[in-house]
Length: 167
Image (cartoon, rainbow, N blue to C red; front, side, top):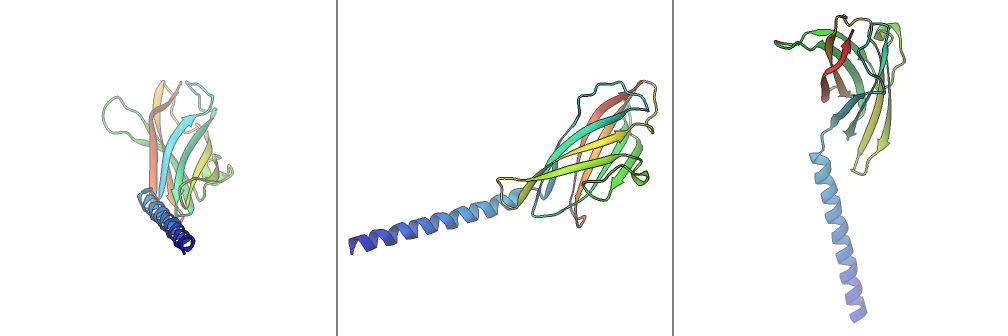
């Protein structure tokens, strides 16, 4: 009888731990953003740049309980005072698009990997960006990236001020 009582206690304890673990996972999942860009950087290139250059930009982030949707980027001037003005922007209908006339011959490639968090994937992407539309004259430009969920209900942005300088 003692053995059965101990066995029942072990089973009850194990099942309560598993249930508690599930609730912790559920609460953690609720706390995570649906989509989030967390980083952006320039790939092994240094400026100043010229309009004929194509730069490689890396970005990363995570998505939880949603499917990836669209990626956009926009260039803004970086004035020393006053509001920034958008110079150029490109829309990609998915997280991976080849260079084409419709996207100004820019491209995006993104890979998704499972995270240790429930229902979450992290992503790493590369943008190949043509600089033909950025005016020259030792001017600096801010790059902003926008990522959206498939249904368009959630968006995350990330910007780096004075990301590049054009000669």
